[in-house]
Image (cartoon, rainbow, N blue to C red; front, side, top):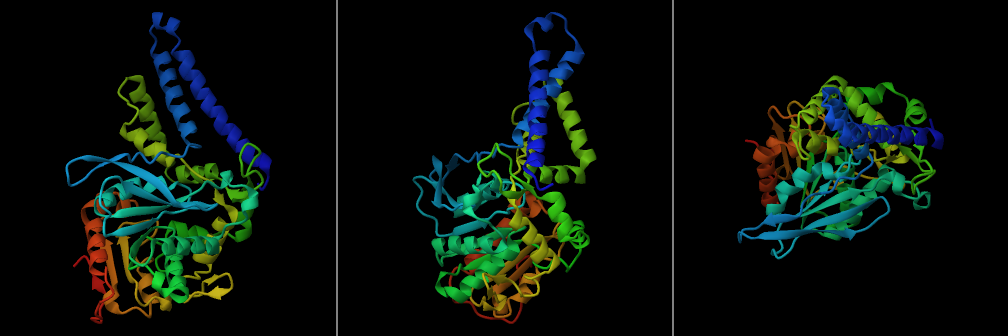
Length: 424
C-alpha cells in the first residue's frame, strides 16, 4: 500500500466518478431531450448531480461560512478570519468581530486532526462568538505540505499547542474537542513546567480518550486487536504526483472516508438514494439538510503518517497519557505539574466513540490540582457529536462551560476538598 501509484489510483477513481456524474448530468439535461419527457432521464440527471457533488466535495476544504454577527448594538458586524500564528502543519486563526470591543473571555478551541477539517466545529465557533474572542487550530491537509517541512507526530502536535497557548497568554481558556484532549492535557502540563506564567486559566476536555482502557468501545477495541505493522502496511500511502506533498507518507483522507462510510453503510446508502429522488422531483436545494451535512462529512484531509501511527501506538495501545508516561522530545511530562489551571471534563452518556469514563480520567491524573479546580459533567442522552455541536451543547453544556470559565477567571480559588459537579 505504501506507494504513490496506490494513492494516485484512489484519486483517479474519485476523479473518474466525479466526471461520470458530471457527464450523466449534462447529457440527461440536453435541451433537445426535453422534447421527449422521460422519467429515466430525470433520474439520470439527478444521479449525475448528486454523484458529481459527492465526489467533488471529497477534495474541497469547506468554507467557514461565518461572515457577519449581530452584536448587542443591533447592527451586523463583519467577521474577519485572521491567521495569528502560521506554521507548516497548522495555523492559529482568530474570528475577529470588526467594530466590537474586545471580549474579556479569550477561548482557544483545539480542533481534532482526525480526518475532517477544523470547520467541523463551525457550529461550536458560532455558539461561542457572542460571548468570547474565539481562536481555533486550523490543521492543514498533509498532502499539501512539502516533504521538506519534515515529519509531524504527537510530540510535534503537543509543541504546536504549547506555542498557541503561549501566544494567547495566561488570560486564555482552552477547550479541546475529542481526539486532541490527551495531547492538550499534556501540552498544558508541559507548559506548567517550562513557563508557568503562560498557562491558560482553564482547560475543558470534551469527549477525549484520556484513558481509552477505562471503558472499551469499538474504536479502542480496533486499536487493541490490530498490530502496528498491519496498520502501517494497510493504511499508509505516499502522496501522489498531483499534490504539493508528493512523496509524503500519509493516512489518506479518501481511505479514512471509506472507513467512516462503511461503519454505517446502509444509512448512508439510503440517504443518497433519497437525495437522488428529491433532486429528480425538484425538491432538493443547494443548502438542504443532506447537502449541509455531507458537504462537511465528505470533506476529508490526509493525516501525516507519523501522527496517525504514534496516536494509535502511544495514546491508545500504550496509554502513555493515562499512565502519566508521556515523553516529549526526551522529557517526561508530569500531569501533576498542573497546579493552577482549572480542569473540567465533559462526556456524553450515549457516546459510543469516547465512552463516559475515558475523559474524566484526566482529573485523577492532575494530582497537583486542588479539588476546587476540578469539575466534571456527563450529559444525559447525548452522543459524541452532540456534546460539542448539537442541542446538548447549545442548551446545556455551553452555559456550563462558560460558567466554569467565569468562575476560574482569576487565580484566587479555594480548595473545598471535592470535585465540583457543574451539572448539579
